[in-house]
Length: 388
Image (cartoon, rainbow, N blue to C red; front, side):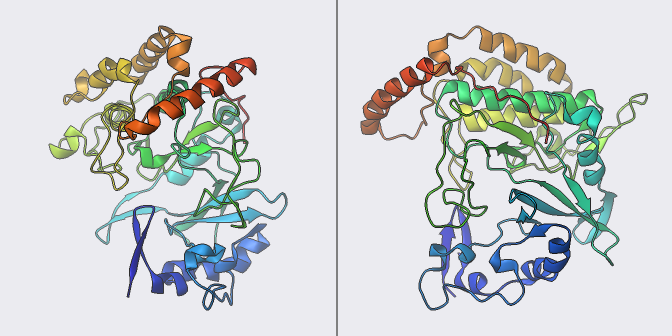
């Protein structure tokens, strides 16, 4: 069996042509989802035959692309053709085949989607559209949410664009903490971008550079021109606490390849402090130092060193020495306010960018920046808040 690598993930030819058991699970729910108002892509419809079987490389065809996370499937909402994500959530957390805890994911996702929270501009928890329950399956639910993109796709063009993302993630965790909820798994893997306005013609869920029908490249605008909004997802390990009671120390988990010091020490600690570490480490790995161990070999970006003192405080080994989120956000805001407009509009250059192309990209960026200033676009994008 031959193996190819796409987006850093090894995929086999056989797996593309034959549905595996988890894909078959979704096919078996096709009619149920259709009755509820959602239609799956051709690959996940009963009786599917690969369109590429005799015609060439599966990756050249829409139905040659399958789920990278098989607990989450894309679908079109029949009423308005908007793309949604349907996530299969188990109410019991299982580790090594052994039930270890009860998941609060459905409850927490629903909490931040209530009328009290969903209209709050600091709430960056993924909106929950509805919960579906498959007949005969008692310990699971299907969470329906808007479909999102990875937050760094496309790459940040300016320092200001990167700061918008950081600010909204800091706001989101602060808002969760203010409502007595610890995320506990807030790595870059659980951060997403609502880019529906950036991509007016939509995009393919498994190959975001293509349109939904896979016939052409997806047209898009920059974040500065059409600001997106960022969200936190995946509350499978999240925990809600009673405001009148002291928070119970928790054992940290390995989040997105990151092992907090308290995880390595196997010492329970305040989960809010672990969230602070994970956020600070995300900024360090994505914007400052890079992460060569990542399968995508993240290089880091030039121009964000002004965040180093704050990040160093957030990632201290001793959880008790880390600042709380109510301290982190004001410090971040003060740092950003001290930056010049030119700094905010400067190009976010990847540290592994080839030297000989920098002058050309720099000149292009200068003309582009002049156009953005002429259009009255802010150096730090800020989308008008719209509750889903």
